[in-house]
Image (cartoon, rainbow, N blue to C red; front, side, top):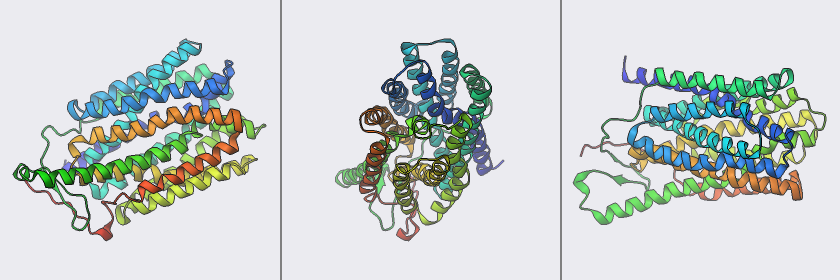
Length: 425
């Protein structure tokens, strides 16, 4: 079996093993706010509980990303999937705000670490010329989980109860844990290679060769350029995520508030609709970005997402909500895979491949951290000013993220005539 065939096999194992994970995570923001409401908590309390799941996740993604650069990806993925599956059993056995807070803390710590490790593993396996396609395939198949998860959750809640939902989620993720443990191969290289990466015409150039260490001044300048570039990309992702996460965890409350006669199955359809589009769009978006670059299609998708947030203010029926959700899925189908591929390209271009786990960990840390503040902020705005005000504020924030993103060079833009050169030390 060739190296490319082994990488493809490992990619498919990872994608299929993460399918139940995305299936269950797609139901959390749909089910948990309603579950918390059903036991008597206010909207602000619900926001706090959601935030308690994202706050530790930010730090776990950062720490696990760094740790995976030293001890490997697989064992950490197995541990965190096991913890995540266990949380659903804990929801089944325990009740009360304090218990929910502890469970959400463990859940957030484990799932965000696992979600952060997945694109790192893909970046390890897949070269830049196929990275967008691989990330798109991952997000496309994940979209199947995001479609089926809410539909299954809706059926379970219609025919059964929250207890059956928790048992189903726990069982599904435990199976994923076993698949990863048995079939997934470690992707962290045993011996890191020293490479020099150069742009032919662009600005980022980082030299890691021992031969050139004497050029301290030049090396310092290159490192500053690399840090500035990565920092701008992280800033753009952070700002965009603030706008997105201020409302996304509370969408089930918005739909039940605005569409007063909505059924559980209709709510499931609204949560599944964006992911149905992602299944189709994400692989195409990844393949497109491999040909024309990541930056321009990513900017276009962010603009579309901001328009979607405004359209929610004009949504008053199930059909209108469904159409807006489909537009949202189109934007998300570009943003997710292109963001991960873009970061992978930047890490390669700046010579940081040996720190890719930490790089993706920081990315997850910044975007997850916004879920903590964004959800609390969103719940407060809803209680004081209403949903339309929150949507308007979120749209403005999302558009603002284009300012730092516009200053980040695209390593994969073919018109910049970027090439990757490897020179032995």
